[in-house]
Image 1 (tube, rainbow, N blue to C red):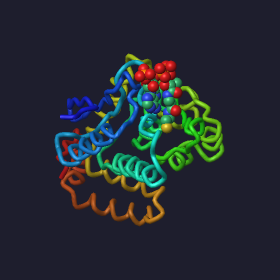
Image 2: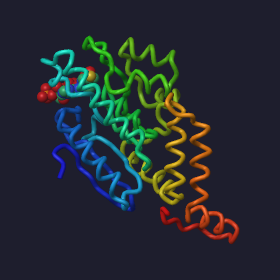
Image 3: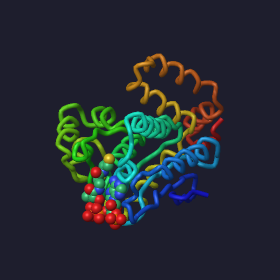
Length: 258
Ligand code: COA
């Protein structure tokens, strides 16, 4: 079904593995085509509750955009490439199902940008993060200049963007770029355990949290007004009635996404 991705759906969690290990899972056109296809599937398939994205092989999550595709680009083509990357990653960021990056090695350039477009990140202790584009005479083109500043603050982001310096998993945790650092062996299980907890909550309320939190960074939206609207929407849902009734009846709620 996909040329460059492996997918596996279990207990409502879709695991996506970017599968070009011989190229350290670099993001080429085929990967972007597949990511857009799998996003269509995630948006339309009700049995997918949440998503983990990771990289094949022991070495890399994603070592960046595929540099071999950069050799002959002109300015207009480069801008189109950047726009396509940004649009794809915006689909991940705005997906109303939780999307988590399980970072198992190098997350460089487009790989760091992909991880940053996810709702949060878990890293194995061998993970390395960075935006090394200035080594190539480039800047990040898939949202990295914006999301790195949002996630770790302007001062440290500026340093990493301008110096191409890579940080390890523990430093990334210290800056808030990742939520947890695990061993390589436990990375996926740890990530899935978090998603199992999230999957047990009311899905429409979880979606509302994603929309409202994303509005903080969207100048076209009034996040407080959006929060009021989403809070109100919850009151029209069967899951809100079930959640409140279950609390009052001292039992576990059973949500239906309605
Ligand atoms: N684009 C295309 N190919 C890439 C790639 C990328 N971003 N990153 C790695 N590869 C390829 C290498 O060319 C090599 O392919 P080959 O075996 O056909 O020659 C293969 O993946 C393995 O990489 P290699 O460089 O041999 O591994 P390493 O362990 O010596 O180094 C890195 C690992 C991540 C430090 C190094 O691959 C690297 O610097 N990659 C580019 C990182 C980057 O600048 N990313 C931002 C791009 S905008």
